[in-house]
Image (cartoon, rainbow, N blue to C red; front, top):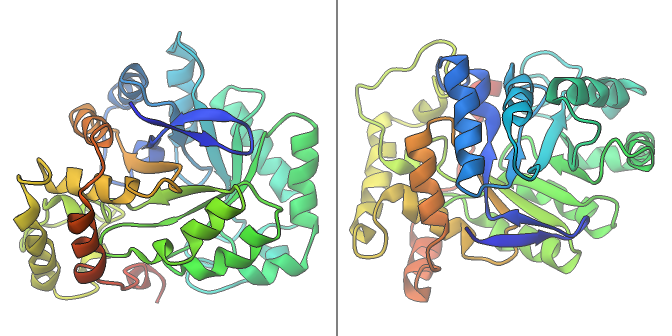
Amino acid sequence: MKFSTFQATGDQVSRIGFGAMGLGGAFGSFDESELIRSVLHSLERGVTFIDTARAYGDSERLVGKALAQWHGERPFLATKIQSKYPGSVGWGRPVPVEEAFPPGWIRASTERSLRELGVDCVDLMQLHQYWPQWDRADYWLEELGRLKEEGKIRSIGVSIPDQRHDIALSIVQIGKIDAVQTVFNIFDPLPLDCLIPFCEENRVAFLARCVMDEGGLTGFLTADMTFGDDDYRKSYFDYVPREMYIERVDRLRKFVPQYADSLAELAIRFVLRHPGVTTALVSMHVPAHADQNIVSAGKEPLPDDVFEELYKYHRWVRNFYDTKFW
């Protein structure tokens, strides 16, 4: 397992993290005991970073159950404050911060997260939505600051609603947050241009999500595959004709197995190549997939020429989240 330093706290964290959205049923139904076991399995394999959220259904509760059974060193725990808006409101376009996170809401959400997780403190608390217009209001940062002073959280971060990475540039530079989480993968490498270097310069952790584009970059998708109504990916891959998505993924197969054992490994090693990426968050609620991801993260960086070819010629920047918001 390879590690990086979470600058705000000094913790050494695994460069691949347990993305816990799958614990809440976003990618299908699983037995609760199996999900708890998946967390323990990843911890046993050396993963030390868990990222969950109030909005991920039962995810926090199941992480808490797993931690109650864990006898090793406690992992770095990150979670997110759920917006007060229901459904998709506030994700596709800005809403007033006073309505998404009204005064007192941040504390209430944090205290519920602590109860669900069964801990007294989380290492990173993130706003699950963030828009740059919110920088004009200080109260939400002040609330997070008070929670930090009280020892209920150790660091503060924001999660970008979709793939518009540039909206975090201003807050990264003003020195008021410790971490940014956003989409970063082979198809969307734009954080490499500005956001990751800005985070590195300002000692802000960069947390990559959607590393495998909701699984699409693993090559699992077929033209006739269907998803259940409760599956987060139901409309995700149909923003464009399904055949177009599959064709773009197939272009990446030329790198396998010469430079990576699988498409999933290629995706992980692409994201982890830049030292400014603190942790790549991937779904690990299936232990067999977790094992493959952990092995991939421990390998050497991709060769320069392979990385440059991926970066320049395989980008396919589009906002698949639009299918959920519009």
